[in-house]
Length: 362
Image 1 (cartoon, rainbow, N blue to C red):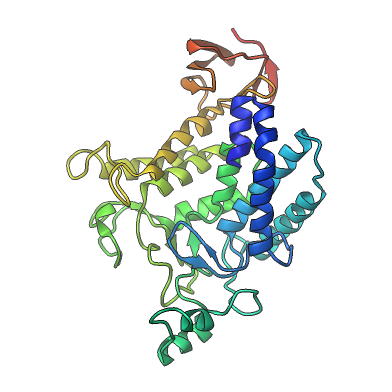
Image 2: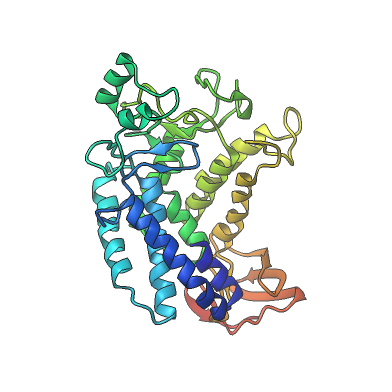
């Protein structure tokens, strides 16, 4: 998806042609390794941003996979390459994600640790230094599956790949109404205005006491595992901004802003540095997800491949910063009429689409 994004930002199809063989090798390796049945889902144990492996298909990682497959179809088509296998995987994965991993309100994980190509957790542990399962751990494995999963939980990152796809200029790879339902569930269940009664055995300094925050995961319908993934009870600003931005994309502005205000109340300068939303170290990169709110609220995006300036405002008239491959400036929408002011370099706009309708710059 990021290669697709860089192509659309730069407009450099020769660069894409150079990168394509490496991108194809990467996606084919991922598919072979984590989707060996070619079912369009990631089910073999796979590492993730929570510093553990998920076992079995889940909304979070499979949405990344579908976004990547969607990007491969677009890039392959542009280079006159065969898209058949990627379209097939995407279609199967989309169907599975929407029907098997959607509980009617939000996307979940189906924990699976048997019947896979990977060695089961007991065998994998027994060959590691100091490994092995105690009788108690073995009983828990048989009852709940491998430790550090989320199962039926409402994960704030549960459809993250769909947000990444949209930020990169792709269409969301999953049914829009189900994505919206998931995001509203995250807002409903995971946003806490007072954490005084919340038990967090990990790093409480991110949000604690009477402060509020968006929990990484909750289990509103029961089923919380004895050993869920270790960060599940924490609050990360990068995830708060990602969810807020995604809600804004779906025109749930109030819900998105409520998450942002709750987050920024913790960084008002009294307890924490307002310019340092730390996580695994100071000035941690995940908080830069906040930049996505500009795109979500205004819909401003310049596609250098076809020279199209996209605008899809969720807030009426606005003036917003725009940065492109060759220049930067501001985009405005006043009375429904778009305008562009280039402060540096050039932004070679050929056409303007405002909410999908072609218009001229003022």
